[in-house]
Amino acid sequence: KDEQLDEMPLVKFAEGSPELDYMKARRQELGGYLPQRRMKAESLPVPGLEVFGPLLEATTEGREISTTMAFVRILNTIVRDKVLGKRVVPIVPDESRTFGMEGMFRQLGIWNQLGQLYTPEDHDQLMFYKEDKTGQILQEGINEAGGMCDWIAAATAYSTHGVPMLPFYIFYSMFGFQRIGDLCWAAGDMRSRGFLLGGTAGRTTLNGEGLQHEDGHSQVWSAAIPNCISYDPSFSFEVAVVIQDGMRRMLTNQEDVYYYITLMNENYAHPAMPKGAEQDIIKGMYKLKSVGDANAKLRVQLLGSGTIFREVIEAADILQQDWGIASDLWGCPSFTELGRDWNAVHRNNLLNPSAAPALSHVEKCLKDTTGPIIAATDYVRLFAEQIRPAIQHMGRRYEVLGTDGFGRSDTREK
Image 1 (tube, rainbow, N blue to C red):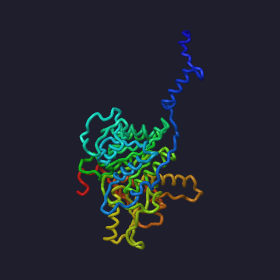
Image 2: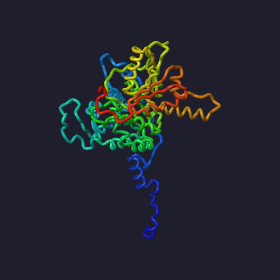
Image 3: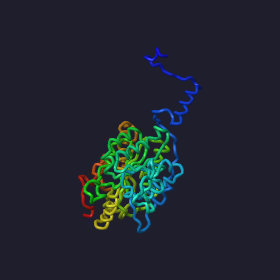
Image 4: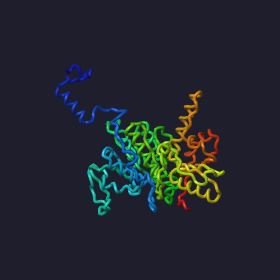
């Protein structure tokens, strides 16, 4: 009534009225009542590790690949999965061909709401630049912030829309956390679930272009975000194990975590995964092999991650051949997870002084070994320093080699 206008009374249609039925039907058609944030969504089964079988084996003689190539193979396998394939959201801000992803252009298409509006320069090639209204790849151009916003939208779709998605955002690692760190922190705060992949990672990986790609610290940035799970894998089997376990945690168990994985563009031969190493890889440290006499009096423990782990392996051979020093080689794809594990175990021991002290994963791995412990990575020393408290607690000597400083604009060989 006119005399009630100043009071703005609530207008409510009767249950079963045409007006209310229409409004409810429209709202359901739009996906439900908004805003709404769900803690859980549909739990999705993920493929087992065996689907990545070829990447768990040693590369054939004369065959060399990079960890970036290994990731692209894994992504192609997931895209073909009947359950997860349609939920995968590949996102690149630039340089798709650098990452070897051009094969996906034709297979999935690059999303453009208007479709292909021009003839691409490479239209006569097999893997041409294909834009499509139904494309699945999001190509943001040189816009890392835009790519990250795309990723957050997909990574939180389980909550805002009740539709769990599986976004993979790959970028040059120097242009990730350093450039869009605030969004990375917000992603954790929003309980995003998905994968961030830093390509051409490591301080010495992509030289010759000045210092713009000399990333030796993104693993330190990511370590500060509590629910960001970070890995710096050396071999294809590590990449496969980490991604498969990440999918299980985020899509099946619906844990509020997201992953950051650094990848390299350096090609080299990859060994087979040591038998039963899966859980140790996930925890951040596994034994690759021993070099030299098992009963040698002189022995050292060598730790490494990423592409520099190959230099660690070479160092073990030099120590054996030139100095007669035996060594145990430990792959450490996540010094961050190792450090977090030590902190959690140490805290639990402090709060339960009458119970038998538990051991961190680092302590379990090294408790029956002898000799000094040396770690080398392609990142600043602070990265591998995260496990120093655990090693000091064992009363052992620990030396860390890293790439502190701005880096070098020339090639690694020079």
